Amino acid sequence: MTVAAAVLYGLILPVVEYTYKKAKQPVTYTLVMEIQLVMCFFATVVCTGGMIINKDFQAIAREAKGFGLGEARYYTVVGWSAIIWQGFFLGAIGVIFYSSSLLSGILISVLLPATEIKASKKEKMKLKNTTDDGDHDQISEAQLAHHTPAHVP
Image 1 (tube, one colour):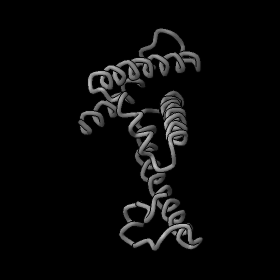
Image 2 (cartoon, one colour):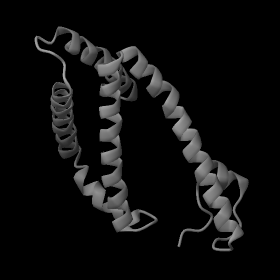
Image 3 (tube, one colour):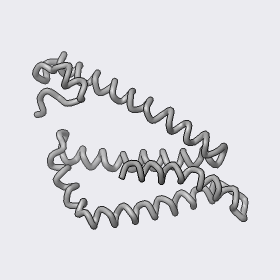
Image 4 (cartoon, one colour):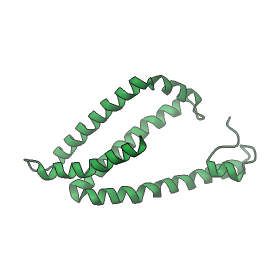
């Protein structure tokens, strides 16, 4: 399933560029936003259909209750994640608008691992700081490597 998703996303960027080239009207910012809106709408419809079929909407409440930082923070994380992803998609489409799908793909390929590494280092620093403050029990190197807190309140 992950490979299929990667292939589909790999096709989206060139298809968007092809759509821009074959447009019978000038490609403007408004047209780019319309294309973004249509793509996101259909993605939402497909994902919502899949979630209904798999009964994933019931899992959201269970995940929120089991979230270590509380239900309110869970929904905050979900909301901000949706907003950030929209910014990502708009940025990828914008790079295609101003340059090419190749550059957009290169930027995604380079920046995604960079953000993962930065987030990983930041998480390790937070875990080390909580142990230095005495808020948690001893933390092992294995827990640091797997980003799991030693003690969840």
